Image (cartoon, rainbow, N blue to C red; front, side, top):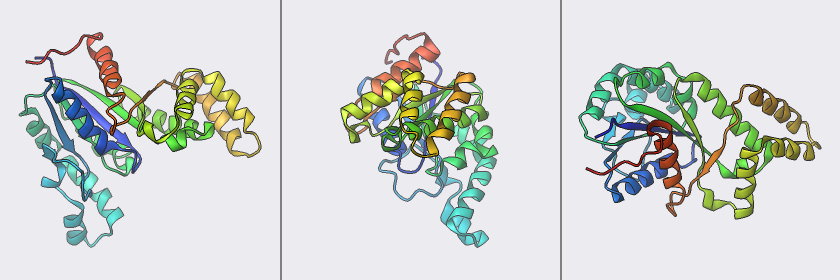
Length: 257
């Protein structure tokens, strides 16, 4: 059995992280692959699935609010830091499962994972295997050229924080028209076309900043293509699997035990 692959599903609130976490597990298990789910959000109320490992067994927002007299936002920050104390223990629990994939559902507030030191502690808690960040973008934002640039900017910012491969995903791809989705994918593959679309929208000052951001990202080769996925229709998940297999295993397919 190959070393486990850990996929960290990250994105803004409502991007569909939890839905995709469960959808990927279902997809993998239907193909005879072992996958477990991990919830890293200490404040989530309902996940829509039962995680195999749950951060709330160690630290939770309601408990921190009561103990420290904090509001929900302050408690989320404290929980993110308190969780770091338990990350090595959590990593050991995760390692006790025999799995091909560890699917990690990160907090709804993306900054709690992307910009807190605790996340680096968690990423470094594992001694084997390979990890990838799956950044889920909102298609409603991405269908606007300046909106897509802002999403790439956040993606690039996150990628600069971690020494971990990052894949961009358009989540809930079924919620936009096929024409809009095709345009988003084309923009991601052809930065010059995205730049042209930004110039076509010069009636506001917003595209001016987006143009400069895009130029900066291009200079560092931080612009990358996108994988459209619909968790409800189970579309695009195989594409994500193939990207990951190519990244770590030269495209070789995993064989079920």
